[in-house]
Length: 174
Image (cartoon, rainbow, N blue to C red; front, side):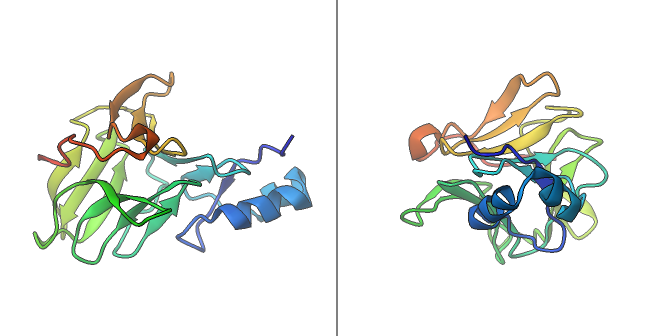
């Protein structure tokens, strides 16, 4: 049974399953000692990547991404936040904010959701206002991006389970 290590990664913006597996092999105490607090956690087998809605979670700039074993959530240089199938590169869900001036993504503690910004101005949000106050966004190995409350109640999802392309709207106006 793999060691279940929760780790936070700040120095490297991309959480890689192979790095987490290496950390699991060296043991939980050493892995925890090496981890940096940044609001992004993943289990040792990278089946789920959890991004906390917290003030300590850094905003994302272009190129930032996290990956589970099957999907990757990435913020593209055109301003689009996209959930991608890692096996074939197909986009499963997107905020549809390409070329609209979006420059950063926030996992907002005050809104409990994912907020996309044009400079310092909120542009749109994923999941609605106060969707998961105190909760987190999970990039799951089943191919779904889900917003969970602290009680682990799902309040919004991309509906991309089993890596099926979503018809879920991407980003609602702020």
